[in-house]
Image (cartoon, rainbow, N blue to C red; front, side, top):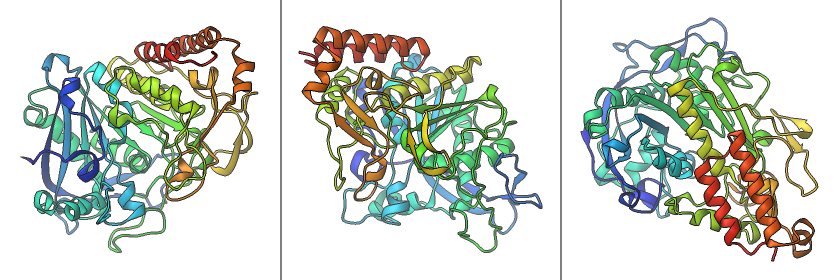
Length: 477
């Protein structure tokens, strides 16, 4: 492992928070890690099964598929060592732009090759509790894009291909534990929690069922918005990157094995429940070590701009304003979702850490109520209340004291618009019918946030900021 140049943030080599981390008491660094990696393969005579009870092993580390690699990790950590809570969130960086839009890179555009989705979406809670965060460039497409966009800093990186990504992610976790004095600036990690969002969550599903039981690298997992598990060769079913490595087709659905032994927290929005063809909420195993939260009024991509949120309450003010005048994504047909997913995700981060540290599981949550269809068989529609918001699921003040109809489905247009959900603001008459005064709106909002705190879906610190935003608004006047 060697130190690397400072990461070039949002817009070039990593989409992350825009502000100087010193404003929140953090600092950043970047390292190159290297070694020899191998693919993992199915050692059973039968195909991989949906229950995740797989027999998987690495190929020989002295055989023909042992390949050298060199990739990068990005580290955010508290400047004051006394603030560190002992937990490192290890994020499989999301390569959606490159993997699905412009492989291997987007020359001549502002599209960054990799996204720190979990850090951007939940850094406010990570900072409050003093987590360290490490982003791992685990996939070949991300490494290739880094080299294309910034050949000066990244010319020496080497990635042998998709099937080796799982071993590289394990070795990144092992390096964090084994060389914490350099990677974490002498902070000593006691817990590693792996996470990934969307495309990265799809990689983590086969990692959980196949690789984690062999390496035992991570102490828990937070899976955010998984849609389609991948085969152990790291490619969608039916695509074999290397004819010399057996294709392990993706089961449908792919679920978490019941004998894993570490906690797994799955976090899904309305979009994910409605549109994922590999999603099956009924198939999971050991309830003692698995939790599923389905977020009412949440979308896979929404308007929350975590890149500028320093935790001072302004994001909450902007959220209430956006629900009344929602933005429309570039090329999208309708205004995008402005729901409360970010604040529920903060709670999920807090709970998964408590679960791993103290054995206290997150609260169970009801599933979203489905009107037609079923998860795993899109299209589906959700049962909704009188205001058009989904029934069931994990609630937020944004759906229980609404100023708009929020949905995770129904948008269309260019690129990823179908994942952005929709917001339909209530008109003056609708708001008047719900709230006869500003005072009544604030009362309803505060009541909703209070019950969400009691249920465990909202953290007290976030409830305070949301309540202050409601107080400062003019809704109901």
